[in-house]
Amino acid sequence: MNDDGKKNATSEAQFVLLGFSDWPQLELVLFVVILMFYLMTLIGNLFIIILSYLDSHLHTPMYFFLSNLSFLDLCYTTSSIPQLLVNLWGPEKTISYNGCMIQLYFVLALGSTECVLLMVMSYDRYAAVCRPLHYTVLMHPRFCQLLAVASWVSGFTNSALHSFFTFWVPLCGHRQVDHFFCEVPALLRLSCIDTRANELTLMVTSSIFVLIPLILILSSYGAIAQAVLRMQSTNGLQKVFGTCGAHLMVVSLFFIPAMCIYLQPPSGNSQDQGKFIALFYTVVTPSLNPLIYTLRNRDVRGAVKRLWQ
Image 1 (spheres, rainbow, N blue to C red):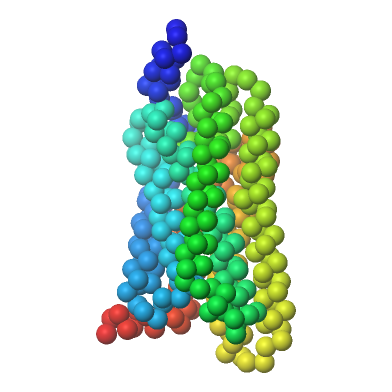
Image 2: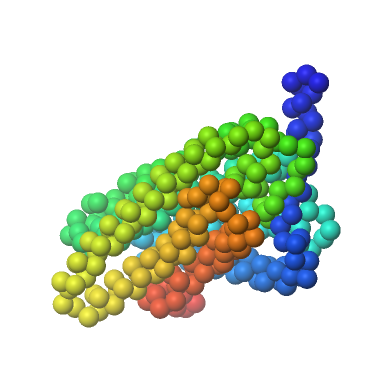
C-alpha cells in the first residue's frame, strides 16, 4: 500500500475508548454523577462570565482572569465529557481517528493554558497585596490582555508539538485506548516502536508547564504570606485570605492530579488509577472552581444583589 493509501486507512480508522468498561456495574452511576458535575460546571462558570461582564464593579484584573479561567474550564470539560457520557450510556465506545486527534489537541492545549493562567492569576494577587500602590500601573488592562493571550498561545503551541509527535508514532494492530478520552500517555501505549523519546519530550514540556508555574505560584504566595503577617487590619487580612485562599485551593485541585499523570513515564502509571485521577481534574475540579471563588466572596454577593435589584 502506498503512503496515500496508508493515510486514508488511518484517517478512516476508529479508536475504541475502553473507559470504565472493566466495571460495567459502575457505568450508570458514573453517567449520573458525571452529568451532574458537568451541568454544575456549565452553570457555575457561565454565571461567573455573565456576572463579570454585566457588573462594572467586577471589571478588574482579578475578575478578568477569573472569566478567562471560567471560559477555559467550560471548553476543557466540553472537549472530553460529552464523549464520555455517550460512551457510558450506550454500547458504542468508538471515536474516529480525526475526532481522537482533535480531542487530544484541545484537551492538552486547554490543560496547558490553565497551568499558565493560574500562574498569571497568582501574580495578580501578588501585585494586589505586595504592591498595592503600584497595582493599577502593574496590572494595566492592556497588560492583562497580553498576559491572557500569552497563556492561551503558549498552551495551544505546546499541544501542537505533542499532538504532532503522538500521531506521528506508528500504532499496533488494535485500536483500543485504555482511557475514557484520547490522552498522550494512553495513545503512546498503542505504539509499535520505542516511545522513550516521546515520553522524555512529554516529561520535559510537562515540567515546563507544571513545575515552573507551580514554583512561581508558591513564590508569589510566599511573598504574600510575609506581607499578610505585617498587616494590622483585620478586614484586610480577611479579604486577602478570602481571595488568595480560594486561588490556592484551585491550584492544588488542578496541579496535584496533573503532576501524578504527566510527571512520570506512561509505563510507570497504573491505568485504572490514572483514569480516576483524570476523571477528577477533568470533571470535579472545573465544577468546584466557581463554588470556591464565589462562596464567601463579598464582591460577587454584592454584584448579585445589584443585578437582582
